[in-house]
Image (cartoon, rainbow, N blue to C red; front, side, top):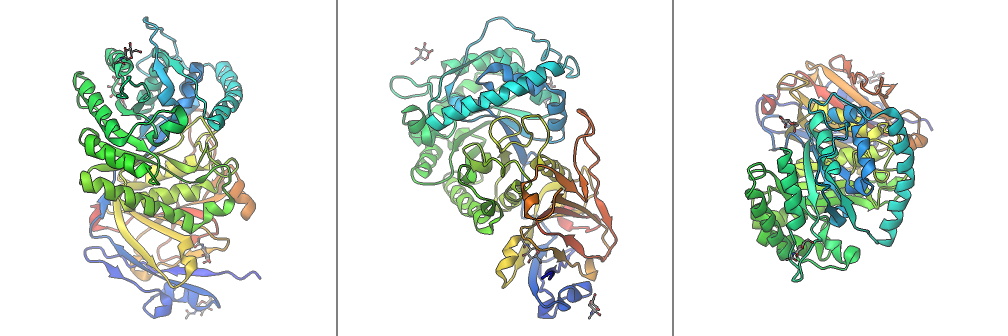
Length: 548
Ligand SMILES: *[C@@H]1O[C@H](CO)[C@@H](O)[C@H](O)[C@H]1NC(C)=O
Ligand SMILES: *[C@@H]1O[C@H](CO)[C@@H](O)[C@H](O)[C@H]1NC(C)=O
Ligand SMILES: *[C@@H]1O[C@H](CO)[C@@H](O)[C@H](O)[C@H]1NC(C)=O
Ligand SMILES: *[C@@H]1O[C@H](CO)[C@@H](O)[C@H](O)[C@H]1NC(C)=O
């Protein structure tokens, strides 16, 4: 009844050289504590692990974990002021370095309508970033109104009827001030549905926006269009990939006329995940546009938010679908433009705004952390989480501007995980082992000395797991960061609070995050990986050659 199933993972750390295939205890090659942890039990899972600490298999962008703000926030311009909340800025700072992409369905309905004079809103004027803040009465008012606004936006999405949105200098000023003051790099998504009679992109509105941004000396980069594969459904306009590539070429020419944007980033085409004609759009785009973009972007969601279940969020088969889609995109890109970076330009658990009660709770962490781990290993260079704050239920920060479990997971990832991806492979005859998912990176050198490695691990099952570390690693101190729900069992999966090493995480005040302390494990102890847990284990003295 209360049978505890233990899972032993033996790690052999090769400090200098080659990759070693290690077999678990049942094969007889386990050693020390590893052998006993499963040997004394009636049910055991034997997993063998391959790690190679001699060299990194790849290196991702230092802004690998990045975030988005959906353009729907600007549908009513006043909501952009939420980005001036001191709390939001504090939360954003902790996620840097990162890109902030401003885009989404409504970007293709937005028209820049300058007021011609520069309104100093007071909120944004201070270039030193610690001037006037959003007053708390206004923040409260906007938060209340945003709840109503979300209903209107949702209705538009359901009916796929989008109205043209006019935005002024104020939207751009607020976005720039938010990103600049929190230390993020802004990517602005331009409207690609402004078309000429012969279905080319009409760049005149973008030109005036670029001129404004240049006049304000705003350092930023650009995108053009969002999910062009669904333009017909959203707007009754069909744009093929090759034309889109020519539109990007036109935008690049426009940028090259500007001193400030000549060398700025341009990313696209932000297509949906490969399926049917979406792959044709990508192929066509690459033919005529690959040359002018700095990275090729696509979007990924595992499931439909309207019918997603708890089981989907914990299903290794669902998590593995990312591999198939990613490999497909990488293959297309490498065919036409070998070496071109590939980004997830917008991604989350479930499309359609997320799955309410799942995308915003503890269980969402499994999809998010697995995407980060798997994406880096497969060859993605940047992953932009839809969304940091605002639309839907897949946000990192909720409508009261309080951080959700995925926010804390993201902050820990930033602090602990470095850009170098190391090889780790787990082999087992047992299907269950698919439910323990492991990724290995060099540790973030801002937090740890060189040579340290961070093991990213997840246990998707009800039962506790135990990782036994053989004597070979016992010389390395381990710092553990184990995230669990604040409530036990399956109920806990739906929780909006998360515990780090047993303590519930919450902000100290609007300008202060709690200390995110690891717990030091004495050498040669088992690593505990409880049921339904997410964990980072930092092997401080691993002395990995790949991480020197
Ligand atoms: C394994 O562990 C059990 C319980 O912790 C202990 O009684 C037993 O002696 C150990 N066996 C070996 C071979 O170390
Ligand atoms: C913010 O703006 C200032 C002034 O333009 C610039 O020096 C700085 O690099 C910017 N920081 C970021 C993160 O964009
Ligand atoms: C592009 O749009 C502008 C502004 O709406 C319009 O004045 C201009 O005629 C358009 N150009 C073309 C070629 O369609
Ligand atoms: C968690 O640990 C239990 C016990 O070893 C194991 O049965 C289960 O498969 C693990 N969960 C995952 C997701 O692997």
